[in-house]
Length: 97
Image 1 (tube, rainbow, N blue to C red):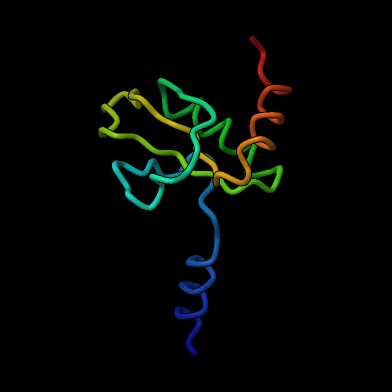
Image 2 (tube, rainbow, N blue to C red):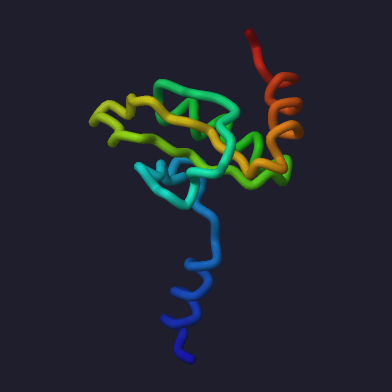
């Protein structure tokens, strides 16, 4: 295996950094997931997504429509149904409102 193949393989296994977390647009893979928060901008959604990821909860950012060029839209922070109560408890303790 060449050095190039090893580097490419190691990149494939890494999770994206918080600034690169994808927003899944109308992705049917997440239809059964539970939404725990709604956000109006990508930057805020990714920050809250990172908090749950660091707590070991699998999360996804989803939207029904593409995000505008300013990073705004209706973005949902979703978790597996079995993780909803744990995610909600964690987010409630982080919520500043």
